[in-house]
Length: 361
Image 1: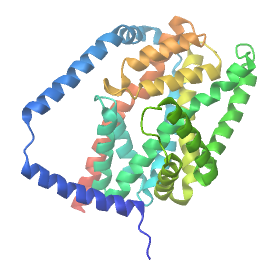
Image 2: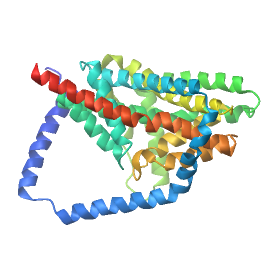
Image 3: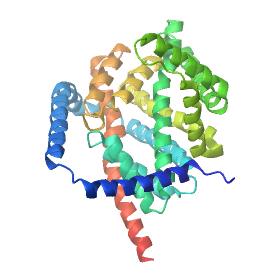
């Protein structure tokens, strides 16, 4: 029997969902008052959230005059590191998309990333824009939907695991006066992290063991609810679907995802070095991971305000002075948050010109 790929299955499911949605819309018109209430609710939540984090955000933005402490070469280096990180992400997305050319992958990712940074719950909107742009380029709907989901899952999973790299900082207890040793230990753990991720994807037993342990802990903590029984099998099933999407180059996808976040983390290290601060790289890693998690907060665009507040606070815990933490945070956010906005707009314009040129040809 011919094997049906996950992309084909998803494309068929999406087509069926679109037909069902059309029937539902014809059967029952949406209620405008509900949409108005929902929009008003999210506007209130966003407004309250921005009000709460406004002091930290204003403090960071008002330090722009202190950016003259940062040499232009440092900014060039940070932009280069961000570009390398994006290149790794494009590589991973192209692996998942298989036959799609480089320009559509790059344009759609830049435009979707920019949109995700300017709208509350922007991650979904950014993914939807990238999906639409890739479909306009002729990519199969099912393959695009599966690829975007798989890459987002893989990138966020690596962020959640990255704090493991900071464990040596607490085991050695000497991170402040032996940064070289701590960094080398961290690099060693980074290699172990990649090896562990590959093992979980390549072999059933490690993933089954993790599933059993998580299932046991969850059942022990929630004795009054229905116990989990099939978590290891479910994890293996999801893993198999992920491998089906990534194909035989899944190992490269894992390495590319880790490299993507490594370059982003190196950007923060460069921002700290630019203001003359040299804290423990492993403790800065904790601040970096916290910032990436806060960036997922859906109530403000791209975690705006939450990232600034969390990053300055955690950098201070890592031993960075308050003034240096604020300026380094601003420099890091300039290249990782603000600069991608006009770049994404330019990428979308380039995409529209490409589509118009293809239509005219």
